Image 1 (tube, each protein chain N blue to C red):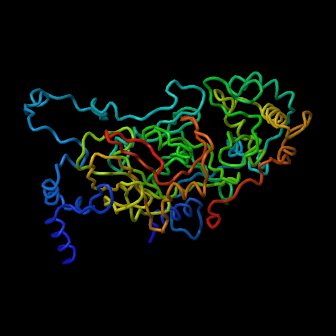
Image 2: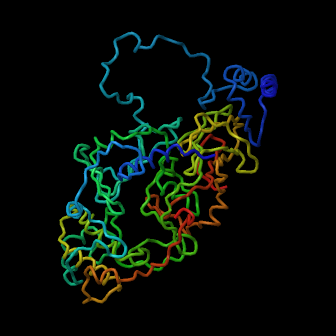
Image 3: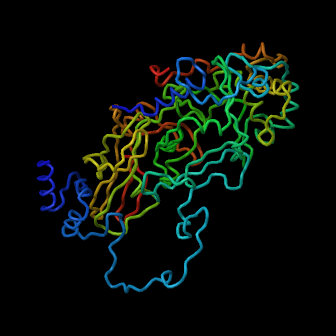
Length: 181
Length: 348
């Protein structure tokens, strides 16, 4: 029989952390935090776009920012290949038909367009994450999507339009252990 | 129990039983300590069970210099002996280029089930972070009625558990998706890096949210990076683990999977933790292909390479060593021993 020794304390912990009335007395050492205080720190974007901030950008603006802050690692056209750097290509990638696909890219693999905004804002540029303004992140998102022919060159990307961009590989996933979901 | 006493007497009084092809010996030989090892010594020119060559008897023993002078001062945090300088990780990005960095555990040089902290596998995508625990915060928010923020000091006052567990990167063994066996040591062939938690399948679809590390084992002694110095008695040893629970059985083959025998499992055998298996083996100096295969308590069986490839596919071309073309490889691994005692990665 599998043991459940790790599960019992975890359940106990989660109930007591949440302050549930049904749980036993816990130390109650968590401090309540306001939604406004969380918002200042929480930068997660959900697949459906929940959490996207105000702001907007177009591919042309993104191209200028890209040349200045991104091309040195990702290459002038977003296709990677910079010597000594393993930064992923951002543009291109043929369809994935078997496991020999040379590269998983934004265009051939990512299921959600909204991940682009989250990833760029959270982690880029590599040497200076969190230095881009939201408008700059939207512009870079628009540039990468346009370079991949997933939107038009003049489309505006913002909190309303970005979630509506359907990625080519959106339906390319299956759940390994469906019973566990 | 009378039954086991009988069995022990029989094992003890006879020469060591061969239990499978190419020199695999009964695992019970490892359990009886001195008595049975003495029997082994009479049955074979015993080098040692750790694989060292038998020493020539002519060596003159002298008092060691270290015993004739004061030793070093004890340090507050002791570091390994200078003689351990080669037991280190292989780092992928020593000059800190703007890309991912990984450090891979030298499993062929470790013989237990606990990985020393300094030898633990690491992968980082933006360098090693420098986190002040006094300033670190855990926020629980989202699907809760009352969002809360915790300091680490506060968390430390909640009930705790300590456990031994394995931690395997999803990209471990990714080079074994190659259509040809790549020649790297077990350190490079095993712990590698993972990029995404979604693995492409032969039909072009991908597993999403595939986090469970399935039942797996591999032999660490001998393995590529080590050599056998002479024919004789050795202990085959390796690690087995499963993200689903306890390891219940490990079978070992020395003839490329034609015949198998059950290895001894070293206690403790813990759920979701490295389990060390051991198998006595008399190497006759000829070619051999060593394999291990593990079972877990939920009935999961480590797949053979053929079974795994049929389900998960194989690359069309040999990938570069620095590539990580796929994840979650858990098939049987083969080490080919040649007549010089060299150990190479093989497919069998």
